[in-house]
Image (cartoon, rainbow, N blue to C red; front, side, top):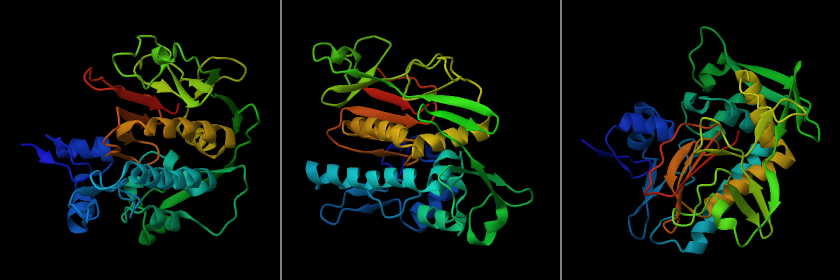
Length: 325
């Protein structure tokens, strides 16, 4: 028996699986936030259409009404709100650490970003090259709350980053390679554009995106994940050899470097925002940690993740799958 998900309005056969995969919620979290608190969506006061919560951990950030809001108002609302989160990811060390740590947001009782940050923060001033990690202490429940404040152990590590994006984590050095920048070719761009629909998109393996009038970025290809294109690549310094086995703590710190570094964060959000302009739906596993409808006039379904994930593309849809790494 199918059920309508109150997070996004989709009709699904297995609600529990849908909640885990698309919204990062357990069935109990969904019941508590949506049914007991009634916070997953609210009705438009003019037409009654549901306005969905953009993220299950960011209270008060509801999507505009798809029927009543003008195209300009809807675009301004989303770009402003998401832009604020992108700036916070760069400036707030704790927010960057939360986004980079798998499963940490799902351990909050309040399901509210500001409450989580308040619980994790200390008064200690951190140096600009200091990065954060968190470990659960044995014997404590995996719960982020004031009553369980001592459960997480903070790991503070100085991580030098050079202009060439060489990142040293203890005795290990990695290099972050950004996407190649290239000029805009008006005659052939549609063959390569990741945003082109099925009628004009070529089968060419390398894809690119236009971010400014004369600037495009080429995505990295992924062996084993041909349908997902990556923005950055982690390599052995001075080579193009991709590092495929990165220890989980190192990966967490590398993600934070990308979020906080001026160059990498600029590239990251420029590409994200460009694809968002054309999105009818967004499955964001990096910033919003949620799947939501975006623009009624959008032409692509945008899936955004930290690392490549196996996907089976629907030939009837124009899906864009982008990973950070």
